[in-house]
Amino acid sequence: MLEVADLSVRFDNVEPLHGLSFSVARGASLAVIGPNGAGKTALFRAIIGATPFEGTVRWAKDAKIGYVPQKLDLDRDVPITALDFLATRKTLTAVSDTNISGTLELVGIPPGATKKPIGTLSGGQFQRLLIAFALLGNPNVLLLDELTAGVDEPGQRQLNELVGRLRRDHGLTVLFISHELSVVYRYAGNVLCIGGGKAQIGPPKVILTPDLLREAYGADVDYHIHDH
Amino acid sequence: MTTTFMTTEALLLPIAMATASGLVGCFAVMRRMTLAGDALSHVALPGIGIAIALGINPLLGAVTMLFFGALLVWALEGQARVATETIVGVVFSVALAIGSMMASGEELIETLFGGAGVLGRGEVVFGLAASCAVVAFILTQKNKLVVMLVSSDVARTAGINVRLLDFLYLETFSLTIALGLRYLGALLMGALIIIPAATAKQLARSLSSMLIIATVVALIATLGGTALASYLHRGTGPLIVTTAGAVFLLSLLYRRR
Image (cartoon, rainbow over all chains, first blue to last red; front, side):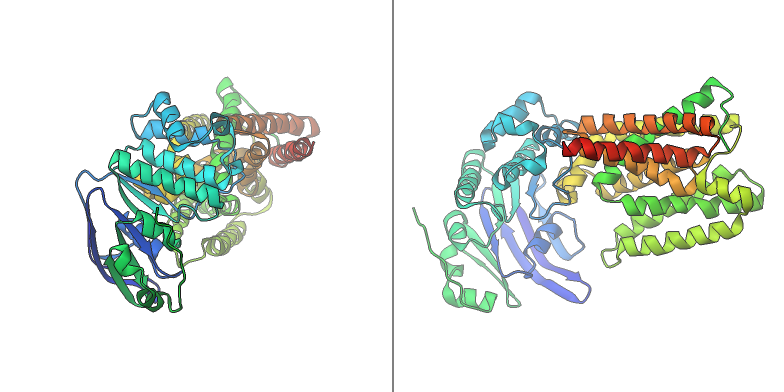
């Protein structure tokens, strides 16, 4: 689905990503981990063409990306309702009101929340709204940048389960950035670890080792595996 | 210094201008470009000065300078290394200074605050056509503009040409400033774009209600301010902006209740 070769991203004199190469198979799930400032978001922004880069990014011809960003450009007090936001999809893709209500149900946004300004939604509801917007574009790839940041523990669990279910039921390819290594261990097929001037990719059991994490993060990293 | 309306078309012009201002302003306020937008209106001044010096229509000079002013803001936005607000503040304040040196006396006051006499037919036609273009742009592009507001990266993955849309919005904004130069002048037109939208942001609960409230407030301010100007024998621009400001204050009181 995605092939990245020799990718470098540079901001002023800083080059967070240098010569990065990896690929993601169709239907696979790749977690991107690493310390703050390692270039995880820069990687996502490069592969969607939002930031200049050197190297090659090659998506499958039929790739349709749904993106859930970490950072929004929006003030939370704007009078745009959840329904206003989702209805914008009508001008971008062939989406009906039925599609919208079906998608809201799928992601678990209660009908009463759709008429509220988006700034008044809880963190978990807002993230579900962004997922709903992405799904209305009929994507076959989801890019999730710290989906559960700022969401309470039950909300995090529900969001992670939602993504796992979407991937399983809809055959989506999922790339996600996360600091929650137990979540990475549970949901990722492969892990791309960026940090310490290196990038390593492999299955969670190979990458999430104390030595490799210490090398990437520059400190000991503790995490607990919830393997169900 | 009151505007004289000679024809039905000339009466339609402030209505069209106010409608365009209300709609464009909503996205300016939500994009947090109120200061940049206000500063952008100042760039019209040297354009008017140059046009007068060259003996051509001042509106043409203003429109040209505003076009390049918006282009400058757009180019700066694309450069992450430059603090856009700072550069915009410096460049457009200098534009104001240069423009004020190129005009003098009554002419300068009118250029800064608006309120010239009889409208020419060409000006009316330009005003109506440009207002229609602005309103059509906002109404047809509002969904894409909303997605871009939420996240330019989401917009990009949804297939929106973010840079092009951004450029078109800024040029639409500058065209709206040009529309109001006759009534409000280079110093005050930015206020008619920003204040009604800021009022609507206080009161509205959805995008459509914000667009409607902003348009209604801009119309009340423009028509009310013009009527007051005629009654009080004062400049139209200051009274339009004062009326808009009064409605904004009322909205704050209403919201507090």
